[in-house]
Length: 268
Image (tube, rainbow, N blue to C red):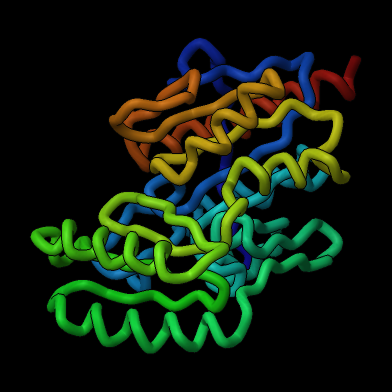
């Protein structure tokens, strides 16, 4: 069943957050949890609204496909969250990346390390009730949103793993710390996309809410792009939106603005 969202005319002065220029061509990158969708106690309970999915689809149409999700989630989960939409994706902070043509790049850990880490982390996390271990294949997320009194123990566990196994790095986030391959971050993922069609030659726009997004903000800033922090906290981003609801409103109104600009350009 197809759903249509009616769009009204918009005055760009009324758009909260950064206002985009008609003279520029843009490439959009979005984090998911805490940016396009509210964070939940359990990652499996997160959902992206139908309105946001439709807006992302329309934005991709206007931008020639230059819309990507860049997330700590695996690509398989990102696909499920925005189904039936198919977008370029960077999952596990860029450890796996799929371009517009469906080509997939993955940074895998050796099987012996994955096996050893899985056994060790399952045993140690089981001793911290309320915490959750998320195994992503090439990375591991140690969640403590439901047991924040165990933050110190979870961080100590993650740090001990990094000392024991070479080639790994920590990525702290909101009530989570991830263990991932070294050199993997969202900034590198955005930079890789920006070297490929349909992103190359356009001005990058990145929206994210977490510490994990700071590398992407720095990359986008270096490219003279637009970086948007969602929520509170110190940041490298040049702009800020207060919450997910504000992001979704900005997305809808920015889409309308770009749609109007496109129609005016065609008429001229």
